[in-house]
Amino acid sequence: MCSSDLPEFRPNVPAAQAKTKYTLIDFNDWLTFYDFYTPGGNLDVYKFLYEGNWELIVTVNSLALFKKGEKPKLGVVSLVEQGSEKSLRPIPGISQLRFAGFSADEEKRLGYPVVNLSVDLECRSKTNDDLLLIARFINRIDPSWGFQQFFFAPYRIYPTSCWRTGDIIRQKCNLLIPKDIPGGEYDLILSLIRKRPNLHLSPEAKKLFYNYYDTVMAMKYLPGRWGISPDMLLEQIVIARIPKAVIIEE
Image (tube, rainbow, N blue to C red; front, side, top):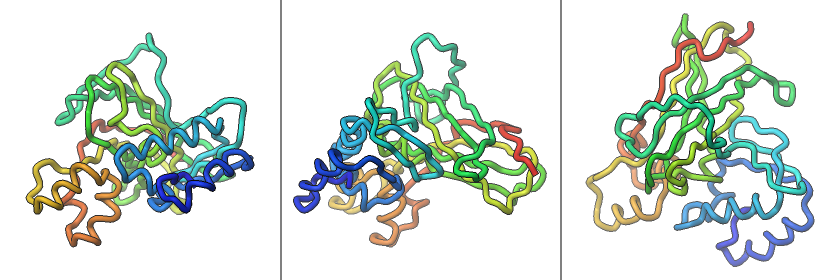
């Protein structure tokens, strides 16, 4: 639906924009976002949602339900208004960004418990990397219990390579709480995932890896195709460790 680069899909996109009142998107489906894996392909995703005046109704994990509205309200990624008081913290290894805060609350979506999580990052200078945010909640008493989620929707709509210097970007996600998870206090670990620099690849593979494939493609598609584990292709940079970030009810 969001792909317009393939000839057989191109005629269907305007029709969907004109006739469809609701759209359910899995932002973790690489087939839906085929164009995203081409240079500039993320702009087609943003254009589809923004020009279609889609308003977010509800989102859980990587799924988001939108309805047609009078103006776009994408909900999962936004600019923080200038003048907001922020305590900025540098991120080791990523000088272009700074951690600018978070909020986490247990709520309900569609009758299920979720953690409504917002993460703010400041863009200090232009980056060419598409950095994927991941949040992990870990039980303070028994660290073997936990859950995590990648912020696929903000990543697809407005990737870090498009951020403007000086802006603070808010990324949001409702993380579904597993039904068998014990209640109590949970610590939060926030990390950014990116492609490892200077990998020893063949000239052709190196060109594809650094100039064509994005971070999610390297994580989900290339390991099986190239026979290289994701840990060898990608690295995780911890940007914040927040103790007692949320209390989950029993």
